[in-house]
Image 1 (cartoon, rainbow, N blue to C red):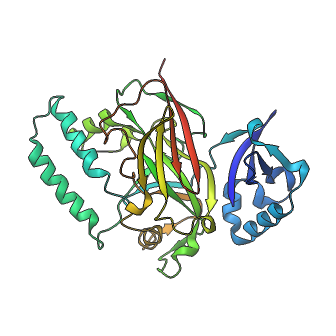
Image 2 (cartoon, rainbow, N blue to C red; image 1 turned 135 degrees about the vertical axis):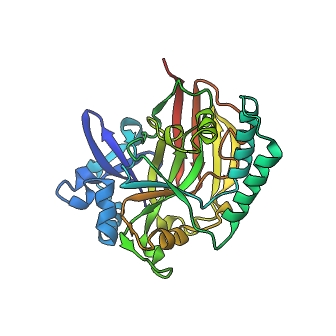
Image 3 (cartoon, rainbow, N blue to C red; image 1 turned 45 degrees about the horizontal axis):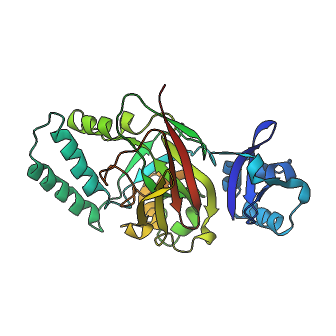
Length: 325
């Protein structure tokens, strides 16, 4: 099943919606079942577990005309605010070309660090990340910096190089600690698309100065977008085999695949729960798929731009980018 969150015309309250798979409509689960707490929001559905999904499936099988809304009259919202948002090192091949571009950019902006020295350090990092025994790294992101699908992202004036990052993301459906490999799958609710917007010049200066590759280069208004929907795990039998595509102003700028994952989401559940709590409603990105950012390709986003990130079996997360006035 595919779930969305939206506003109905004239009603600002968020509604949980179920995709009717007819390309035209959703079922308003919140409106159809106003007294059912499991359908109050996406997080409520996730917290409700399998019993909530069973009720949603029953509603899908028995469509109710009064609760059906046309897609073109509702306003999609971000599916939900994650209880925690992490960007993980499950896909790492993107890092080398991106770091090469960063070193080159620094070389034209006052940093005289020799390219061979920097690349030797990069190669050591890549070797470590590709080691199957290596720990799965992650960076926490600000879950309050989300954005609605189809919304507008204002290009921050502090940066000349705004970049998208195409990622697959998992939605955690069950809390736990010290989860075993045998039980890891049971902690996964589903999947969504994640755009980890980045300010590349700010990021490069941070690396040169404080060494922080995240911070204000990653967490700014509307910079951590997920959506347009959440797809339950039964709809994605192999999350490591999904085609991924970037389009800018209607033209394909990049293609990739989640087959680039060095570690699976089940591996991440095991490792990130070791000695620590994971919670239902967390969202974890894979890291950027190769070909999934303009910076690594040596391209620059135009202003304005329509950026569309598509992941097979899930959907397309689109945003308009406009200059800051």
